Length: 399
Image (cartoon, rainbow, N blue to C red; front, side, top):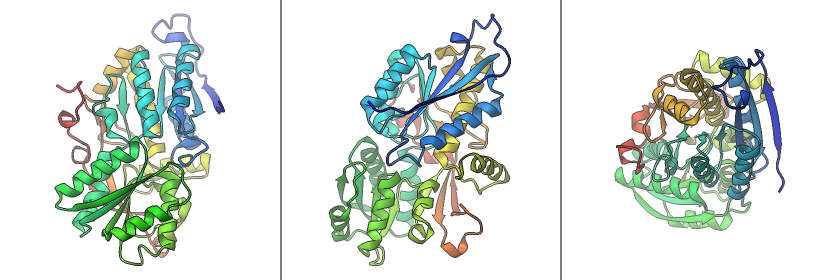
């Protein structure tokens, strides 16, 4: 099994012998994600850097114990991710696993972590099932999910007249969830769904799928995929003259990293939903510049969400006075989330962190003032509207 594993330790004050409330005398955070495939820019090494920034900003220690961050590449395979997670828990004293880009991976590792009684905080996986039927008392979902994307991008396009849809969907749990959530929202708004076609993860030829979507006559072609899959689909749709013919593309999960990847010429006019934009406030701009100085890229919602998740986890340990799982999970549910990512966040009983999300429109090349200045914020969607009511989520933890 090919695996990329890196470790960095942040050592501050010397560890006193009396650190009975911190297991193994340290706190160890694992960032597990795709670092070599279609989602490498979506999260990848940039999420690892965001986690390191959070640890440094917290001070490098918690309850007097050093905080360490490790990372690995799961290659978008749930079995590899589960093997890494099991090794981390059993032999490497990892206390929590975060990021977990790819919904199949997120669901698998959350289930394994429930058995191991370990906390997971998903910031890269999208499926709302993480806080739905497959929720866990130790599972948390930060940054975004398929329901919020459907409300933001799907709702906006229907209201603008895009009332007939055809979906081009990634053939795994994330794609199904995003298609289902968006379909339901389109229908609730009075629209219709004319059909769908599913494509393998990381395919390179979208021609047959796009031709089916084009032939449907739908006003909107919903791209229920992400990362390089979405980038390639958009590029090939332009080659087929789909948007020139009057059909619109809905990039249902598209972030700043992917806009940068294809450029404003190809991405201009796209509507998308993110829960973070670096050029929105003075605080986000300052964070974005610090991140840029370290990585050469501006952060998207996954990177900023990972920063927030790590900070919140460390704050919960500090408030609990221990890194014991039950106590930390209780504090994560209890404490408000207030940082550069979310100023008004709260964690619901099902583990969903609820904060505002933003409907964006990608600027035309002539409208961009500075590098990475790619979005116009069209609307702020309050978290309670963007995310599913926990009582309706299907999570057994919600009473």
